[in-house]
Each structure stands twice: as C-alpha cells, then as structure tokens.
Amino acid sequence: MTKAEIVAKIAEKTGVEKGAAQAVVESFMDIVKDSIKADEPVYLRGFGSFIKKTRKAKKGRNIKAGKSIIIPEHSIPAFKPAKTFVGELK
Image (tube, rainbow, N blue to C red; front, side, top):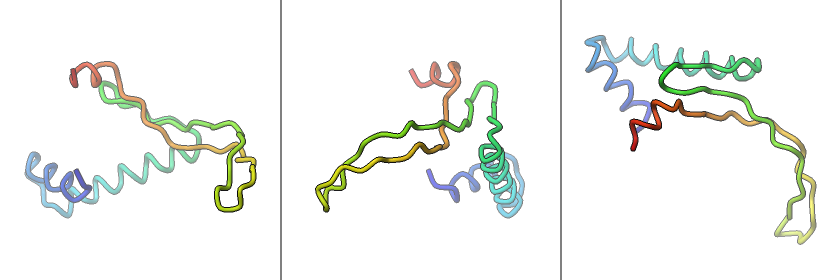
C-alpha cells in the first residue's frame, strides 16, 4: 500500500477531504522522524513502537576492490509491532 492509497482510505473512512488527510499523514510521518532523530521512541498502544537502533561496527567486504572494510557503528530506524497487532495477523 502506498502513501497515496493510505491517504485515500483515511479520507474515505473519516469523510474528510484528501488534502486534509494527506496533511495528517505527512504531519504524523514528520513527528515520528523528528522524534526518532531526537532519540525519543514513539509508542502507539496496540500498534507498535518506532525506535532507533544502533548497529555495532563490523567487518565487511568491498566486492569490487576485493578488500575488507570496517563498517562503522550507525543508527537505523526500526519498528517493533505490538503483541496484539502480531496476534491479529495469525
């Protein structure tokens, strides 16, 4: 499902215009991004959590050069679904 399809579904279910639904979706995404950047997890009860994970430094390979490289420690955004959400999928 694309963002445009999500906007259309929200507009259909709530009866608001697509423009307003798109503004809500965009705002939600911006808030989640800003919170994760600030190292503040976003918890949505019954749905899941958006968190920031740190990956440790590790060895990797540059296939083109055929040499080993060190991939530095870095952070990535992650989503952890709630137990109730996972239970609904079974």
